Image (cartoon, rainbow, N blue to C red; front, side):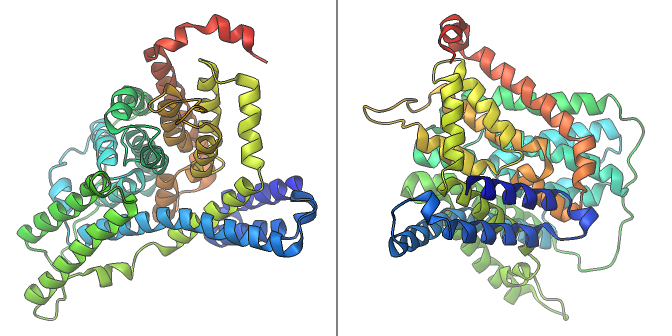
Length: 452
């Protein structure tokens, strides 16, 4: 059973990676993959749970499907809310407030401006939302498609690095924050500098090769010119709704997607009022209803398919066995757990980081007498960094990468050749900085003796 599930996952992943050569949309592959894995798992009860009768096995599968669908739905609805808010801001031309301030056409300066802006914006919003915002900005700043791809690749790196150090910046950091493994101030203090290094190293490398000026797209006079006060108002309310999410979670102790949906509801009401007041001369002002009509649904369905596929591997015990294997080799003492986190980070570029982090969270209790890594232990902080930034190594290894790939139609192989090695260089550099910042690293001799 294990061989069959892993083999099918690898084949499905291959077709996702080869989307452009085979001309088969990755969303279709992901949906088929998720369904097929659970179907095969359903018929393997004699192998997975010997002696369990059919009715009990069917209930086991049903319960786990519902549980994992619920966990996936939390992420999907969080992202759906964020994407709708961002698209509403775009529909109201709110991002012109930012693009109008970026006047440089120098390639190197523009790279630094966009990377720094992405890095800090990602910490406030989240890496996928920020990637969507920045691609919208890039389309207004860079005309040439290949040049835009390069900057888009750097946006992925900066968005993932920026999301790693914020409790609301990346799905995996959100998970650790919600469950209590890390606290807000501690995760910021311990991972900000490593994440910054992770972003700066690739920018330095690429910046050294860039020369000349960027060709901007020609300005179009077509379309409705949104009043400046409305642009600024919707930008302020939209960003405020996104920033309000962690505040809502802290006050109510409800999941972040509830805060995101509440923020969307507020913005929805405001845009309905604005639409009734300002729509005239045949021009209808955007509302959440019109915005939802052009939300990137295939990207959301891709998340659904791939997360359900990986959740099957988790329920089948494959990811748990992987985590146990890492634990048996490296142990739980420093710096052994650093290597566990590093490997999880690299694996998150292939297998979605959410179930990998979930497996680690389930494997290592942080409360009670059985606690292995207590709250704010370096293991959890480094896990947030590695899982958040390691996904940049492949374009489909992170939410930001998937969003950019869908919006800009970036080729998997192109990213592998041009961006992956930069992501790996930044990942390793930031990891080294984190480990050097942690004093427990300077006690390696005992760990080497205990290495199994």
